[in-house]
Length: 367
Image (cartoon, rainbow, N blue to C red; front, side, top):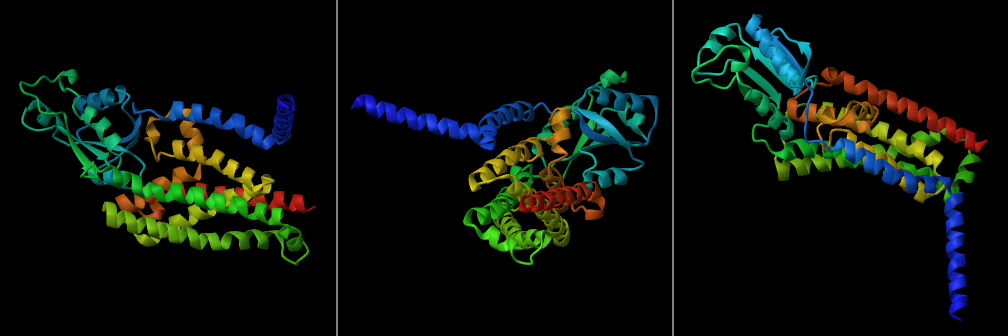
C-alpha cells in the first residue's frame, strides 16, 4: 500500500518535471531570476560612491586654482564633465540634473587660500540624495596643504552648499521616485496580463473576427490604464505632500507630462510582454523579470553614479532611470522639461520601439 502511494507520488512529480521542461519560459525564469538577482545586487549595492559628474567654474584661473581642480579630480570622487563661466551657470546645470557637484573658485581664490579665516571656494552639491551629500562632505574636507599653500589654522578648503534638500531627509529623495516604481509595477503588469487574459478566456478569437485592427486593439487596451496611471500619480503626490512634506518646486503640468511619457513607455513594455507570454502566470513572471533591474539599476535605491560602468549602461535602457531623473528634477529642483530633454527622448524612443514590436508580434500570432 505504501509502495503504491510512493509510486503514484513519484509519477506525479515526474509529470510535473516534464511539464516544467516543456515550458521553456518558466524554466528560463527558474534559472534566470536567481542569476539576475545575484549579479544585479552584487554590482548595484555600492555605497562607495565615486566619479560624481561635476562642473567647474574657475574664475581665478591660476596655477593654484587649477591644481585644486586637478587634485579633486584625482581623488576619483568626481569627474569634471563640464566647464561653467559663473556660479549661476553651475546652478543651472545642477537644476537640469547634468551634474551632481559644482566647484566654484572665485576670482580672489589665491588670496582666500592664503588666509585662514574662511573657505577659499564653494562646493555646490545636489543634496536631494543624502548619500551624495555625504560623499561631497569628504571632498570638502580636502586639506589645502597638499596644494603647496600651508596655512597656520586652515579653514576648510570648500564651503559646502547643499541644494534641494537642506533638511537632509531621505523621504524627499525617495517619495518622488516611488511614483515611477509604482507605475512600473502596475502599468506593466496590467497590460502584460490584458492580452493574455483575452486569449485564455477565448475572447481574442471573437475580437479577430471583428473589424478592429491590431493597432486599434492595442491602443484601446492601454487607453484606460493611462487614466489609472495618472490617478496613481495624484495619490502618491498627495500622500507625499501631506505625510512626508515633499516639496513641489516645479510645474505640475511638467510633472504630469513626464508621467504620461513614462506611463506610455511602461504600457508599451507590458503589451510586448503580453504578446510573448502564453499564460497569465508567464506574464507575471516576465513582469517580475523586468521589474528587478528597474529597481536596482535606475538610481531609485542606490546612487546611479556609484554603479559600475556596464551597470549604468544597462540602466540607461530602462525607462524608470529616465523618469526618476525627470520627476526629481521637476519636483525638487524646479527643472523644466525642455532642460530635461536628454531624459525625454529615450522614453519616446522606448515607447515607439516596444509598441512597434508588440503590434508586429501580435499580427504575426493572428496569422
